[in-house]
Length: 233
Image 1 (cartoon, one colour):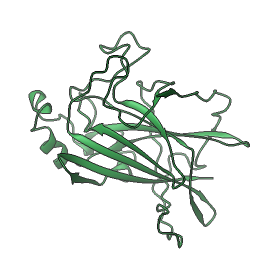
Image 2 (cartoon, helix red, strand yellow; image 1 turned 60 degrees about the vertical axis):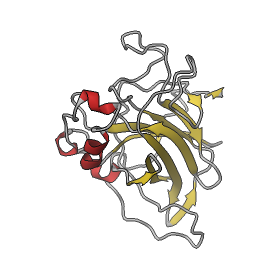
Image 3 (cartoon, one colour; image 1 turned 120 degrees about the vertical axis):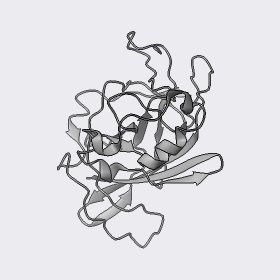
Image 4 (cartoon, one colour; image 1 turned 180 degrees about the vertical axis):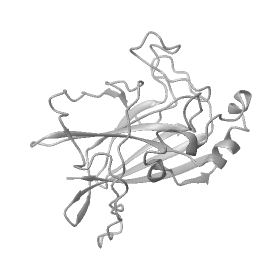
């Protein structure tokens, strides 16, 4: 595993998407190449307090690289298909950094910097991957837990860098309420009971969250989801 070289503040001045928190745009027609993801511009949402610059580049987020401990939970295979939208064109965006971080089954985040968290010095359920030639980054993780005040969610950040500029896009992903209720009735989530806040009652979800719902399908003993996102050039 290698450690990411974080972008400087100066490099990250430009934010992808001139419209910022614009709502979901109309889907553009796919190009002749069926491997291209649909060009879909998604709304930006807040980073929150638990992003850690310098995450590890890795696919399996369940393992804490410092202790070797594996976070238990319902498996979730998550893929991001990132494309760049410019005019009427839609093309895969290769070599973009896709960062993912979320809480464990008990509702706790790891942190390598904040001594106030119960998991300071750990780095479970966070990391990044670079998109491949098809604009895809894949992760193996678990279904996120819940904590008071928020609906079930996970965070993501996409960073790009070219000779001309560097840019950053940050948002969150959400899960169907009924699916979360089903997952939380199974171990290890069941000991905490049902989540306390539905999507419709979450103040952030109400700000474009419907365009950030994951389409989750059963896979083996867990689930899988693919998220298409288009970033404006």
